[in-house]
Image 1 (cartoon, one colour):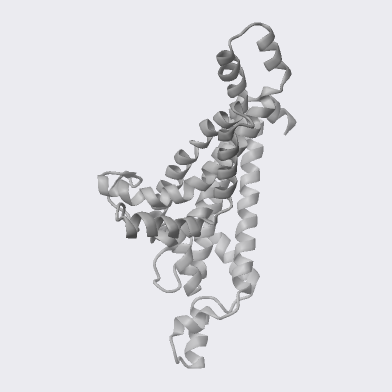
Image 2: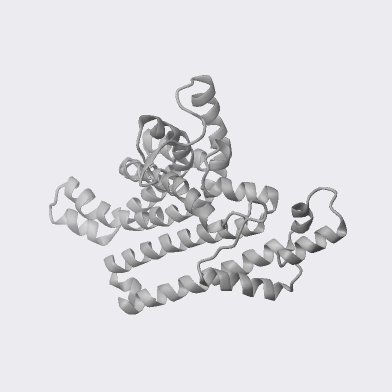
Length: 318
């Protein structure tokens, strides 16, 4: 198990290194010159050249990348090109908002597990068809469309819930007042409901596959009750791959939070990256992407380790 953990950690380092290189390179390929925007409208060529030199933007790509990685190894994500604020400080302020949203969305998506089991146990019935069709339709709706729809109906028309912002929290993540909880409801439902559809569909497929297994037929042949067969043997095996998907989704939802936070104006990593893209603040974009990648890879690592602990065949095959 120790060797497996070491291998996975080495893979994490390689992935993060690759992401920094690709992100840094892609940002340099984007048309436009940050020095022009930094110098201000109507700045002279001399002023623009001075800003470019001061920010190190006139150095070769490999020198800029080397300096960037060197700073990263010292825990320095650089400074915003426009506000001159440390990117690390900006991420520390925004990350709890995004983590709060992602965790809430994962808790909501777990509702897909009982829905998937219910659908599988009633295969080809009206409720199975209704749940499966509804899941496929919901799964196909873009998150921003669902977000604007929820905002319009529940925020503007019915005026049941606030349509943006955040409230006070405990430990930076847990909402501490009813008003704080209310600001989380619409974004979390928007992000989580689409994943509920996916999880329910996968749970149904997994449950049906397990129900056709030899050990299920053996359990029935031994005279076990249907309840014991379904929940004691079938569900216990069918839920493992789905829980793996749900764990990985915690990282995937960080990416979905970019759109959701923009729609609901939540000051998290997603909104920070969106605003940085609009202003071409490369340091903030790179820092935000690196954080999102680390969160995704780390969540994936935890899921892999948990799966390897439950099923030793995983670490042996790896």
